[in-house]
Length: 360
Image (tube, rainbow, N blue to C red):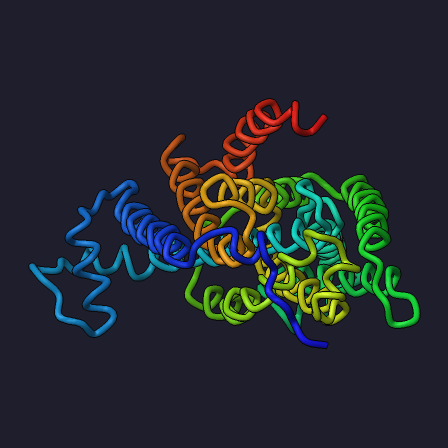
C-alpha cells in the first residue's frame, strides 16, 4: 500500500519553522547544561566551564584551566549533568510516544504501569536483597538495583503488550486499560514490600521512589546512554505514522502505515527509555506527562516536532530540576522527584484550567 501525504497534519508546521524551534531548544539545552555544570557549592564561571569542556573534547580551549575546576567538573558535575539530560530526554520522549499512540493527553509511563513495574522490581530487590536475593546481589553488586528496575520495566511492558494483542493485532484501548490494571497490581505489590521493610530499607525505598541523580558516575552514563539514545535517534522516524494516528488507527492503515509495526516499535522504545531512566534515577514524575504539552504549546501537534522537541525540553527541564534540588537546601539535597512534581503540578493545573472549555 502506498503512503499518501497527510494534508493538514503532516504539513501542520513549515519545515523552516520546525527547524528554527528545534535549533532554539538545542541552544536552550546547551545554555542550561553549562549553567548546571557551573553552579554548586563551588561556583565555576561559564567561560571556565566551556574551557574545561573544550579541553576534554580535544579542542582548543581558551584561558587557564585550574585543576580544581577540572576535577570538580569532570568527576562530579559533568556525569551528573549528562545523566540528567539522558533521563529527562528518555522520560519526555516516552511520554510523547505514549500520548501519540494512545491519542490520550494524560498517557505517561507512570499511568500505564511501565514505571510501576520498575518500581516494584526495585523495591522488591531492596527488601529481599539481604535474604532471598543474596546470590543475585553477590553477582551483580551495586548494579543489582538498576538491573532489577530495568527487568521490571521490560517485563511489565511485555505483559501489557501481550494482553492487548489478539491474533497478531494490538488494540490500543485494551493496552491502555491493561497497563492501568498492571500498574494497580504493581502498586499493591510495592505496598506489600513496604509493609515488610525495616527502618533502613524504608528510608532507601522512600529516597529511591522520590528520584535522585546523586552519585552519578561515568559508568552509569555509559551504561544507560545506548538504551536512551537509540530511541531518541530512531523514534522520529515514527512521526508521520503518529500524525496519522491522530485521525484514528483505521485511517492510518488506509494512508499506508503498518500500524502493528508502529505500535510494537513505539512500545519497545518506551520500555528501553523508561527502563534505563528509572534504573539509574528512581521514579521521577511529571516529566513524561508535562513536556509533550509544552512542545505542543510552542509548535503544535506535528510529531516531527513533538518527538525531538520533547527530548530536548526534557533534558532542559531535568537539568533545571536537578540544579534546584542541589542548591535549594544546600548542603543537603532535595529528591529530584519532589522538584519535578512541584514544577509540573501547577503547570498542569494551569493547562487544564486554560483548556477546560475545550475539554468539556
